[in-house]
Length: 194
Image (tube, rainbow, N blue to C red; front, side, top):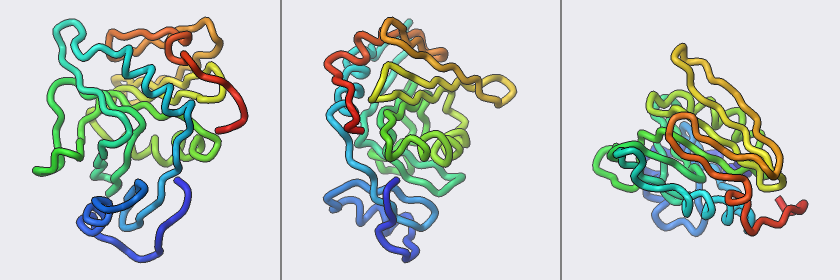
């Protein structure tokens, strides 16, 4: 989240109409339209690396994976957002008849930047947790070999695991999928550009 576009209250319908012709992407949060930060080359490459490695069929289960341009609707927070990556098990559930807005991700992945990392860890994660379908939340650093993994437990608490170091592997807890950091961070040049 960077800056508000205007302090005027917008309805969800007004936001969706404005977003159709917008030059840049915006989030919608309970009446406010918020301009989204732009991505970096590292951000884009990490998302591509993850998608390229993720199979759409695992153990006879079908998955859909969406990258960055599919909106997510979170009704409890009246929040439209564009997660960096979403994985849906089975068929996507759309908001009404709009097949560009999904409501049922099993896994959400955000790629961290200096500008968005606090927002991704706090307000955004709080909203994501309200989704009954969400089982796992990943925060991937684009400035070092580092991933924060949150997995929903039976008692509605979230288990946190930090994975750090070039020779590590990210193993999803809720889907039978692993990716080495060498593959996840392939072609990444770490610098202070985030």
